[in-house]
Image 1 (cartoon, rainbow, N blue to C red):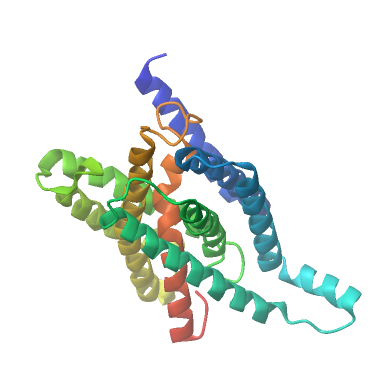
Image 2: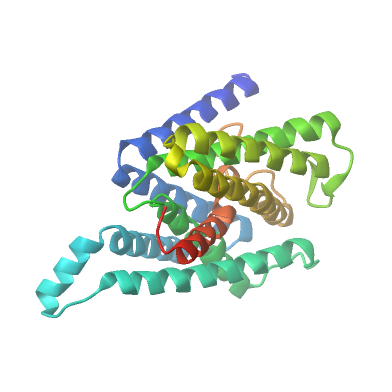
Length: 300
């Protein structure tokens, strides 16, 4: 089969599967991203050459536990109150848990950035490999699910909007870089990325964020100004952190001496290749949520 046709078919299947799971129900969204998490952990273990069994069990346990407690809070609270015979406020504990997980994730993200820009060592220690699995792979998937609850209930528009920003940034970074790109962004890691493409991707992501907010997320004029500002900030985070996430994965692949993280998507590589931008940007978007929440004392 022609390589372009193969790439097109696998890309369409991926997008249809993604959108269908997001739109169908909360459970289908959780299930698909749980499967994506396991595949991504498997691929990352291959990249850094460590045993896969413990990381997959760890990822499954953390993902199922945190998502179940976070998003089925009322049911969990009732269950515990019934069997422990005392009143438990899980909401408070969940907020504390979110803060702890976010701090861990941000610390590991900073370690990833240092690893990308300043670490010349081409061999990763065993302890760092497991730390990356936790903070670079597992926790970002949890924050992707948490982002979907921008409002009180699950809102598929938020997740779809986030992926539209990721795809817009990637597409126009490539187009602008291909057309007018002259200055390399980080040539030793990704020779094709340019500064012009990087800036162009962010600019078009901001435009996409404006349009998403104006016509898709909140068409109600009452919320338009606030929503536009939020989605422009999200677009900037996606443009900057998404690109850094892409570069970090490229460095892992360069050290491993491979082109793709996996072969599950013909012509595209692995799931990590498809989600490297969004998983690195997710905790920073969730951090933005928290900052806005504490400033306004209301969720959006």
